[in-house]
Length: 371
Image (cartoon, rainbow, N blue to C red; front, top):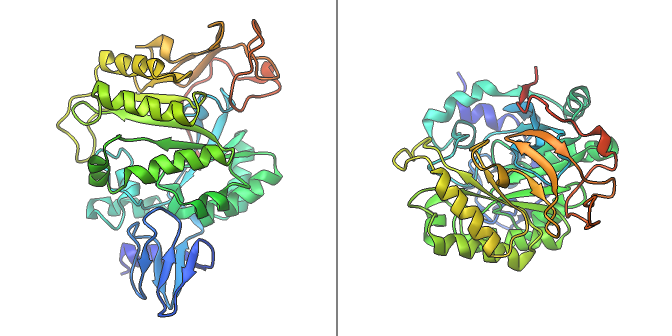
């Protein structure tokens, strides 16, 4: 009987992209900012990229999750509101966050309790994913659930075909990127959602990352012209101090005050079970701090209906209500076909439809599983 590692290793290809071959049959991987030096027969930190015969083998030809999600679930609030994103994920991650809500997928080969995710696998081709997107009516294809950076070769094989069909593509990522992987993705990627988990490097290292790498990714992605939205899960006692939230807000503003910042509520999950869920008042304070720091578009998430003013999009100039939301459901959409405020004409940063009458209002706001 094959082990889970053997099953996963059987769904890989040798890749010459995002890698440097070294004279001793070692390879240097550039899919994420760990930049792993991987010797023959060894694995990278993510566990799913490995060196066999002096070649880097990377995940290929399967999904462990595939469903049509509201784009707001990613969350992207400034990318085609009301649309669906056909979302696929594989297995593995370059971080080991104690509160990961997708840990069964992300911690495969790191935590034996995640072995059950091998049963989620479905072999598919890029063409089949495009067909699924068209059948579902999705305007966007998203790579999510596990960390997409470590499966970028597979994502690009899908995104190339999506671009030919006029489907936009986005990443939902921890932001632990390299210049090489961002340049590789840039021709196909429209949006990049990045988690800014903390402004303390010591705490980032507890999660398996480095603060500077994530800050650099936010800067690089914005400079490359990707539409960036940033998410901070506000965890009581971990990253919810006024000082740290203000640092995060000021950093985002320093890159661009037009970058939306989603401050979202924590709930106990996986190995992080001690902090209580984030109170509404803490989330409201975080949103107010973001505004004080100069971020034009601050949203509060994971507590639908509790902070209505921070679920909606307003014109930063005249405060006209432009997009009204509850959770993932759009109630009103007032932007013009040029993506501007109908009252004062201010152009609102984002990726908007040029057919505002087509925006889906009052939808289910729920994912749809794909068989």
